[in-house]
Image (cartoon, rainbow, N blue to C red):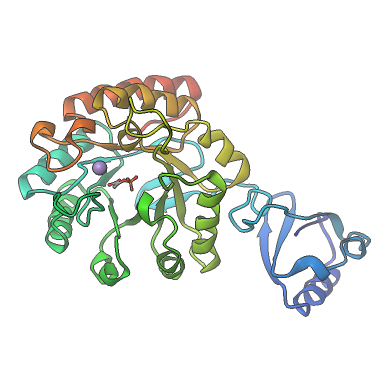
Length: 339
Ligand code: PEP
Ligand code: MN
């Protein structure tokens, strides 16, 4: 349930209503905007008499929130959430670009690739140390050694880093990581989501391979319910009957999520398509559809990559992709990366 209060409502009446609601075991989430004050009510609101609340002088309107997700719902929080990491913001207008290899392989590979993506206009770096692989015989990532090398790349570039957490057992290794990624395969690892709700780092939550937008928002609700409001969603393609691409990029998820939720949404055109030649057109399309950012795989030698070489851009191709996206961004009045 959402209560919108009238402007300039007398404090004593507001306090009285607050008290009357709280004594019914309901938590109130207050958002004070420039024009209105909105109260989001969380808990069993069925017993609340909507009409009696609406009858109070200080109340503008009362709405029931039908959707099962409450705190990530735009009705609760009409303004866009902007996640700030260092000097970079995600959400609220521009297109933030995160780029880097699928996996951290060697010191030379990660530092060289990261310096080149920075030069091409990326705001942040990506790289996997703990990799979710379909086969137990595939390269599983360098683990804590990979994180150590990634921190060197963070230092060399001065850019924030994003990397995937596969198990809560590793969380203590993530102290210097700027954004914790929850991969597609862990989107519904509810115990992990609950723990991340208690941590004070932004979470990049990727849509599961076969999950609906509502399920993605419910997973975000687990994190926000724990108190962590710094959540960034990511559309990374879903499984359909199509076999020409690794997954099917659901571009409509961008405007749909922007309508339903206040959280920023990124697009990962690399895992969505599986083919490097599709990354540039899909990145441009995502910018045109209103994405808050892109997360793109770039490798300094894709042919030798230990993971996802076929979908990785060379630094040169990434530079071109950035320029093309900046042209679309220009039309929309948005800055793409640092260009
Ligand atoms: C990744 O971004 O490294 C990754 C494994 O992606 P996803 O979880 O979307 O498959
Ligand atoms: Mn990958």
